Image (cartoon, rainbow, N blue to C red):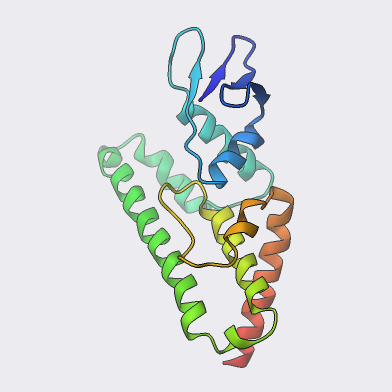
Length: 178
């Protein structure tokens, strides 16, 4: 549990130290559940801080949410559709998690490259990338037996761009092989 003091500083009660928004984002990417509570009032501030983390990433050019999606989200707050939007988003992310897991399983099972030297390292990078991209989705786990699970644990924001670039290069090579 993270407690927010009146000074707006965030305190991790598990490790007895102060944390930043980036630390909290890292906890979430690692699959940990996070709850942020105001020390004085006891109010749950988790949603507010998660939105702030998303806003900071988007403002740094790490655009995950297309402009149309953001526009539709704003509209949903002012229309009757508001009641179906959370359900739709939850189902969409559930489908994304399932697709990512199946993709990783298929890459291992059907990929002729799986016998090539260095494939396990590439798979570890892809698993780390998928974990970084979907670490905030509750319940997502890399496929069983993945060699990259340990490598994914150490993934940091700095490595994400490198992993994205490597993944794009590998995808390009796979497309050329097809």
